[in-house]
Length: 393
Figure: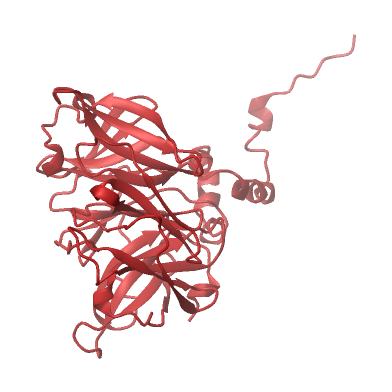
């Protein structure tokens, strides 16, 4: 009988070890960012390939952390980050960025960060030779230190309620900047919206459109402690007030042609929170029973944008979420973010601004770190290492 030969993993190596680097670099850009994070743990060699500066430009990235400040910067409906600007990782480990001071930008007296979207930043840049109060918009990428100065929109500073950034590298290499404009002839408890100005990096110019919502939309004066807007499917979504001061979400697209507004799950105890995660719009808030004795965190997802029906995704009692920390929701609690690829929700709680994370899948709570004097807004940061022509000077 002929001798049998058995394959030995010890002699031939694992299946992963037998993949060539060229083959790996063809496979890795096609996997989700969540899977890529796991592949970093396969071996030191895989970690080196994934983190190599020449390779990471082509690879999907995941949430690295959140930017925040130690300065008070909330003014009406607008909020921004002013120096010092800090970054905490989602694990709580130190993660210094050499560009966090924005020293790579042209000489300036001050730089305020208005928004962060998929690795790009929208800033108000106050040059050293400009008059007091005058600024220009700059869109920049701290990972590559590339930036571009935008032309003026032609709008008076007092007419612009907020300015926000829209960028989705999976859809286009171009970005958009939105200015929500105040209706200065309207009266009410909150500023009404007259329209929008939108800048496109593809055309290099601004468009101006009057609002076409099906009801009067106002931008609420409230504690804008988190990213109150988000960019999804070429639309900017934001918290708003509709008829009868009802809380709702409003949206406008990059062309200023599609205007939407729809309700959010009612009865929330505080200002709700919107965020993009796993391809869908999410809404979170706290709800009490009839006597508010038992309070629960509830997370909803909007899967069908035509029916505008919110589906309950997760609910849990707050006594479990806060892990024993005594929290007053409307005083020492702030939303931070929802992980774009995982069912993780981040928030701060308590007097010492403790950054925490709740895992909806495993119903586990994790204390990440104290942010000490950290103040909102908290801006999620997903690094972008690709070179964009729209940022070339």
